[in-house]
Image (tube, rainbow, N blue to C red; front, side, top):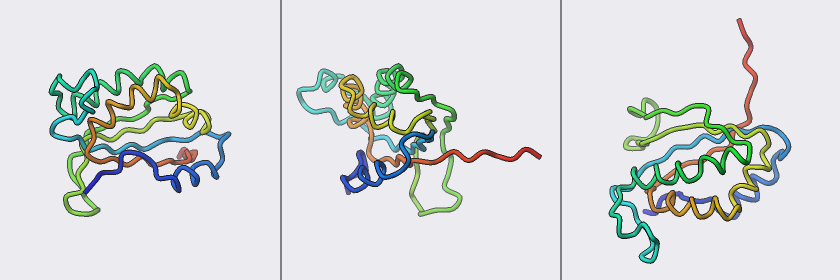
Length: 141
């Protein structure tokens, strides 16, 4: 079974139909491949990286780009176990990126520098979920 590594055309259309001017938070759930799967002609193909190592190359390469588009990682965790959910639906890393303006996320994913960094993401992951969320203000007690 092929993992979910990018949006379908319908998911991209649905994203664009939502408010583009307000803030969003993108919940990321990722599962690494044992070995990174770069295209044969990619400069990193001969490095024999694990999926985890390739993902950390992606994070390092994309960090400044994400910030340039108003993104900020606000929470990161290593999931331990699924308490409620499908058996075997384990994730290696979970994190949330806050974007001040939703449209800036869409601008970022077509940026040439980001697309170059994203080749490491594609090589690193067996599966992922990227869930757009609208922040909700919490009431203080």
